Structure formats: structure tokens, C-alpha cells
Figure 1 (cartoon, rainbow, N blue to C red):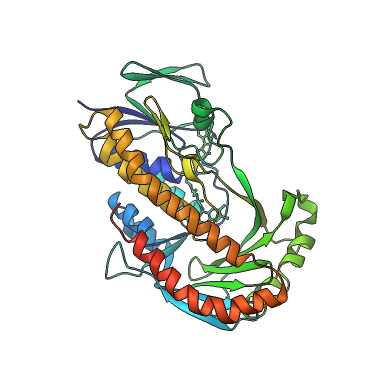
Figure 2 (spheres, rainbow, N blue to C red):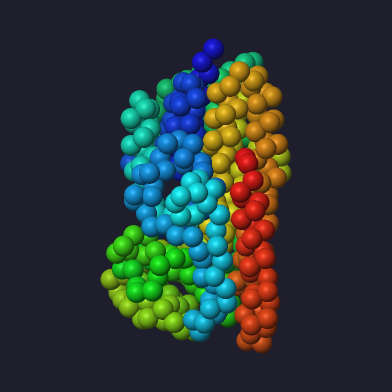
Amino acid sequence: MTRCILVVGAGIGGLTAAIALVNRGADVEIIEKYPESVVYGVGLCQPGNALRAIKDIGLLDECYANGLASDFTEWRRASGSLIAKTPHSRLADPTRPAYNNIGRPALQNILLKEARRLGLKPRMGITADQIETEGDGVNVTFSDGSHGQYDLVIGADGIRSQTRRILFGEQFEPVYTGHAVWRIAMPRADGVDNNMIYFGNGKKAGLIPLSDGKMYFWVVVNRPGNKRIPKEDFLNEARKDFSGFGGIVKGVADTITDDTKIVYSPIEEVVMPLPWSKGRVVLIGDAAHASGPHLGQGAAMAMEDAVVASELFASSIPIDQAITKFEQRRFPRAKFIQDETRLMGERGQMSGRIKCFIRNHLILPAVLPRSTEAIEKKIGEPI
Ligand SMILES: Cc1cc2nc3c(=O)[nH]c(=O)nc-3n(C[C@H](O)[C@H](O)[C@H](O)COP(=O)(O)OP(=O)(O)OC[C@H]3O[C@@H](n4cnc5c(N)ncnc54)[C@H](O)[C@@H]3O)c2cc1C
């Protein structure tokens, strides 16, 4: 019997889940809170495991064609000198580069186009305000007053998930990590051919090439207390936070002007033990396990969740068992990424001149090649 599944949230995880479920024979509806697809942020790194999930839904060529791919990350000191250049694993296709960087709007368009090609018609500007499991089904009341009945509901509505709140109240709200990030899209600087991460004093900068002409520049800073920064102060505050770097970062930071479009976001995480579900409603992606950006793995985890969800929920396994299997397969992996992300965040945000000197000259040269290899090995495991 074909299962009827509602996906809440047409973001990265929700669209991937909807596409993968339709491909595996489910009958899917998808809703999105905003009237139009609004994409926050600038660019996204798609590591090997994200590309493997993208391949599952048949969109690998589109992603490579719209992004910039490479096999390495360069880790540098604030001065610009090289600490290590570490390789990534080719998980999706051994003949193509290991990771791909892509603009967020480009990825959203690729996913939406594929969803529509498969006959999905995302209902935009609508939320699921009441979700109640009754017997073998879930009754949903939408914000426009309409109702629906489904075999299963997947909450893919992101870090501030309304679905999570309906299931668990305010128990698992996002927690501020003490760090915030500046992000800017800009013309690609000479020499930025792969991801470059710079370790500064209490801050970390990144240069991420997105296409031949574009790149994405970010700086993560320590911001205890999550002080709000008014928009009119962005330029001044950003300039202060961008100081202290040499190499390409200095040149890039010096080009920022009044007209530069700057995005500033506090970094938060959602730490939730199992279950990620109640009745026949299950959370995926950031709704269940949002992590900071330090490993560039959040969207990759959401896409992996989506693929595993489609394998289990479109199968003939009874839904209760499928939900338990889903949680058991996904929890250890999501926890690994959250823990490693936190560790990388702490390493990168270390402050104090002597401590940072020791980190940059003694610790990172020894630790980075080993720890990145271990992470690559883990993300390369089958999901
Ligand atoms: C600074 C930064 C950099 C990052 N860089 C990377 C990176 O390089 N690589 C990587 O893999 N990850 C990265 N991430 C993480 C990544 O952005 C997220 O993990 C990913 O977007 C999660 O996907 P999702 O589908 O769970 O949620 P989202 O992409 O947030 O999608 C949720 C969707 O649900 C919709 N929605 C919200 N509420 C409702 C509601 N009540 N009803 C219906 N719809 C709703 C939203 O509008 C949205 O469309 C980064 C994150 C940050 C903050």
C-alpha cells in the first residue's frame, strides 16, 4: 500500500526527503511556512557524504555544474602561513572531486525544480498548527484552516521547528554556543582555489570559492552573552572582527564597504536525546540536531536523514518500527558530528596570544591531519 506522508518545511532536508520518498514510491505532500522560497545565508560546502546523498536523488551533475569542487582544505595561521593541507574522500564518485561548494539559492533552485518535475507542488505560506497521532494515522490542521490525514508526518522545519514544539514543548530550544558568524558573498580573490581556514586569536576566518567569479568569506568570533548588533553598526563591528588576519584574508577584509551585504548570525545548536519522534511524527535535520558550522556538516546530515527516512518510510516495514530504526541509524552519526563540531569550534575560538601561538605552531600541525582523517573515515561509513 502506498504511504501518504506530509513533509513540513521545504528547505534542504525537507525537499531532499520529499524527492527521495517520491522516488521510492510514497505519496508525498510538502508545506513551507514562507510564501516564497527564502534562503538565508550565502554558500554551503557539500562534503562527500552530502554529495553521496545528492547522488541518491539524482542531482549530482546539477550540483557540480552549479558549484565549485575541490579535494582539499587548507588550514592556515592568522598570518597566512600554511599549517596543513588535508585531503577529503571522494564518496559520491571516485572520478570527481571530493566536495562541492554551492550558493544556497542555487541549491534551493535545484531541489525545488526537481520536486516540481516529480509532480510535487509545495504548498507555500502555510504551517501545520495541530498535529495529532490517532490510531494508524496523523490528523493535521493547517494555518489556512484546511485539514489532512497522513500515515506519517516528517518535521523538517529547521532549527526553530514548530513541529518539535508541538511534540515536546520548549524542552529542546536552540542553545547559543557563545560564537557568532559574519558571512559575505564577494568576488573570488586570486589564490582561493579550495576551502581555506585561518586560525586567529579568538576568531577564525574562512574563504570558500563558490564559482569561477564568486566566493564566500566568513569570520567566526567569540561573542559571550549574544549581544545584539544593530544593522547600522554592522560595518564597524565587522571591521573590528576582521582585523588581525594577514594573507588573502587581509586583502579581502580591506575591500568591505558600506555597500557590502553582510549577514550576521549567532551560532546555536539543538541537542536532543532520542526519541526524535512522538506517535507517527518524526523530526529530521536541524529540527532534531542542529549543529554549528565549524565542520560544514549540518546540511549534509539533514540530507543523509532524508535518504535514510525515504528508505525506511517508503518501505513495507511497519511505521512504528521504521521510526525506531530511523532514530537508531541516525542518532550516533548526528551526535558524532555535533561533538566534533563543538571540538572544532573550541579549537578555533581559542583566545590569548601565547595559547594561540602554541595551538598554531605545535598542536594544530600534529592534530589537524589526524583528526580530519578520522572525520573523513567516519563520514565515509555507509549510512
Ligand atoms: C553559518 C552557517 C554555515 C553553514 N555552513 C554549512 C555548510 O557549509 N555545509 C553544511 O552541510 N551545512 C552548513 N550549515 C548548516 C545548514 O545550513 C543546516 O544544517 C541545514 O540548512 C539544515 O537543513 P534543514 O532542512 O534541517 O533546515 P532548513 O534548511 O533551515 O530548512 C527548514 C525549512 O522549513 C521552513 N519552516 C520553518 N518553520 C516552518 C513551519 N512552522 N512550517 C513550515 N515550514 C517551516 C523554513 O522556512 C525552511 O524552508 C551552516 C549553518 C550555518 C548557521
